[in-house]
Length: 219
Image 1 (cartoon, rainbow, N blue to C red):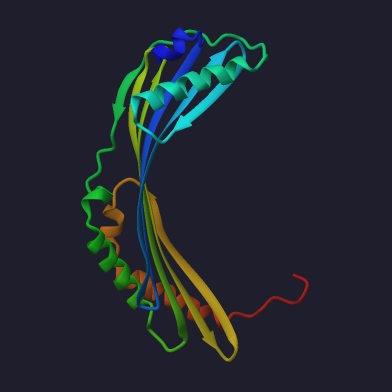
Image 2 (tube, rainbow, N blue to C red):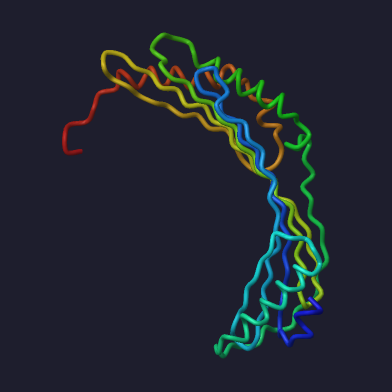
């Protein structure tokens, strides 16, 4: 922030974000995908007049971050937009970390895989089920934002998604039904869900749609 102000940025901010992602996919009782990703980076904005300059880096090295800050101001200087100055705002200092009774990071990958295997197995209730798919995704983002007004903000975002997709086939006809469970925050909903019932209900709906009457052509 100081480097950008010293380079005559009228307003500037810098945001650090780390992103943890987990994806597990089970197809026909077999694990097809199990992947963890950890990404992080810094995004920088600087305003000169009515023009904005942007820069980013995936490095946490001080020299690299300072170079990115200077690049943001340099980018803003290349613009000639005439904008209204940003009104001075009161500095806000706050840390918002969700209080979750079951945080995804506190549930092991092995436990999540077991739940997904059970969900996939539960879909096999009939020979009419020719394909079962179960997927779990989660994303945990940690953010830290500073700006030239003196604000210092930290917050965390937690999201997850779990789904079952059953494919039923009979007499040359094929139908699919998908059941989804997801949201933001705690995994309590997953823990409290009857996984076997969820998988079985999905398969039953797929089989049920096989007997659905097709609408007339043109509708």
